[in-house]
Length: 146
Image (tube, rainbow, N blue to C red; front, side, top):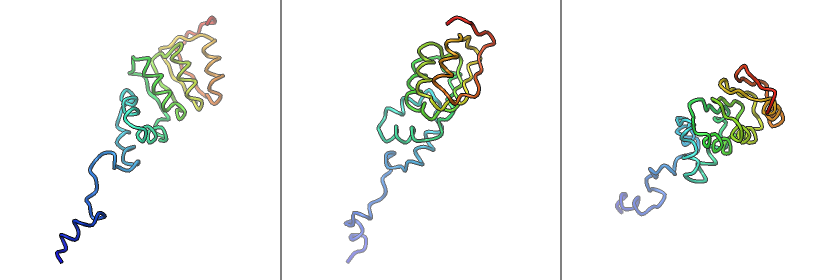
């Protein structure tokens, strides 16, 4: 009997798949770690497995929005991986955006918005929504009204 003919009929002898979906979760996570935060929502929408791999990772403990102008992106990312975020850096996510980020980031320890001028009400909201908060960095001016 020809050994090569026998090997080709054995299903366990098939070559491993070269498709990206056949990669182990650890390899996918290593690949995803090279993405910046602006690409994250696109990857999350590819398939449920990719979403699970990304959202289960501890890699998203720091969300850096400093170069992000799109307020919708803040919300999408916070909703997807915010439960893991411990540090959020941003230019000035205010109003509904900061509310969504904070609502989805209950484990937040540090919030840095150096260009944001915020009111006392927003400071109170931050403290109420993020009981673990240790550090808040904002513009020096904090207004007593809303």
